[in-house]
Length: 120
Image (tube, rainbow, N blue to C red; front, top):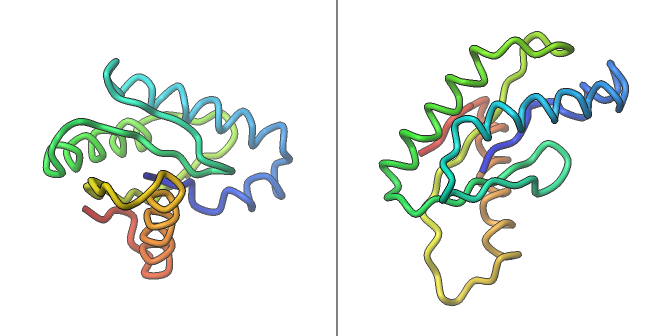
């Protein structure tokens, strides 16, 4: 799971229409790095999830690739877009999708509170 840092501020400063352009550019970048068998989607606001079949180690490598793609992309509106990434193996027969997303969002908040851009 990953989240655009300060996405609300992007919308406030540039306006929602330019925030939407930033989202579209980000989605295009990430889709270029995500394989056909991987699932990529927006959870809400500036929060996204990627579901992989790989091991956590391989998922961490994939997240680093996506981070590199985003860092090298020239966004048309926002010049310094940063995202926080959390990679976590989620295999639990007792948790439903909402609980899994909630737990991942909690991990994202911890990272952001610690000014950490990547946790694997």
